[in-house]
Length: 564
Image 1 (cartoon, rainbow, N blue to C red):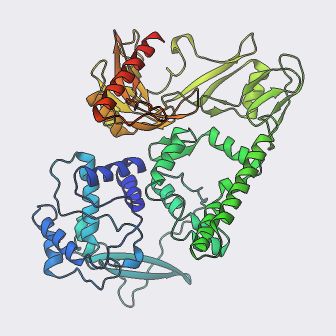
Image 2: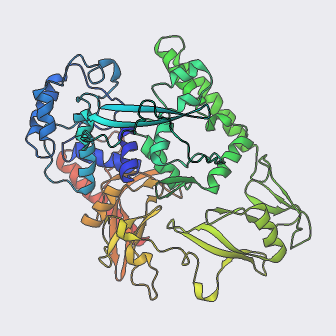
């Protein structure tokens, strides 16, 4: 699954979550792929006959028939091929391969993912690609310079991906005739600098998570993580999406960029002296302990006692600090407090006066103010031309900051620039696929970083023509794209079970529904009916009595809601 997510991100820009969702639909809905949440790249040793039957089905297709037929005709499927058939390389589930059912109605992106899996399935049975490589050593003033060129002479597995053998040696280097002396016409020395590593994309981050064990110094711990990494094929996508939802990461095209909130979290964890939460050693240690438990070397009680002790340590450390006492490399500001003239100091969350109550947040609209910018804001009562703010919809915008007469920090623009966030770059919906139709105006609803929003509402036209939007996370419950599709199509989602009440902090389950009241259209909750409570000692009710009691309970519930 992880390699499929990496390749889909590199080739098509699909997020890990999108790839997992598509693969799940191809498995559950269309029945054309095998179980996708697997970390295996091999097939069971008794799957040779199944592979042959799958190839027979693919032979009937125009796109894959030629390659499937060649595999069967030339008997490329060999039971002895341990690269493909190996029970030792399979944990719970084998590699993702096509089933013996051909697809009937796939959309464009489902078709792309299905094509990737089928081509990989066919390619693994083909022989290696063969190249003719030419290496030329040219000596100039006694110094050797190497040049290389190669020509594809046998496409092998590359033929599945459309490659053909070169008919002419266009890729080869021109050889110097025997006895001929080459002449160097020009020598250029270039002074270059190494570039910093590129930002993580989802593809490279998935690779890093899969190979996180390489970062562990201890050999025993590194061996424990060799087959594990951080997360599993089923959870890595949700881990990345969770970081984005919690605003620790943002997507910009294919790149994943950390937010100021992410740096703030690392500062906090280092200040609290709990570095184990930021290092893969913790996962490695747990994997080692679980392996020892499996062998009977330690007991479950011992393992759980260590975890309880670590949790106690983290909670104790966290309780021992307030936001202004978290240790860190924080600055003392040169500019005094504008309210009382005392010294100003930076702490974990704010720039604060050491005497009075004046202070302001370091992070405003997902952008962190530098110490220099804070100095200017305090001294001049304003700081201008700041870039990189981010609105609630995930759109970037530029703005100015000023301090008003009440010593409060606020955004401001020129009079012709409008309100907060309206200076943001407009969203280009032409390159995006709509989730569904807006229930209020009928325009397209699109998935942005933090919300599903109607394209008309995103324009913020005056007068406002539509305001429909729904968060991608509601009361800590992620709203997956397929659920939003159901909401916009049917007016109701499936039963969602991970909502957390903002008042009681208790979990609850509910359906999301489209509510219409006069001109207002919004997303609301619909709760499943509750089973009636049976008094202790009461005789068991018959089926008819249970239904009557349930109806009575539901009726009372509706009356209570109306009164409230």
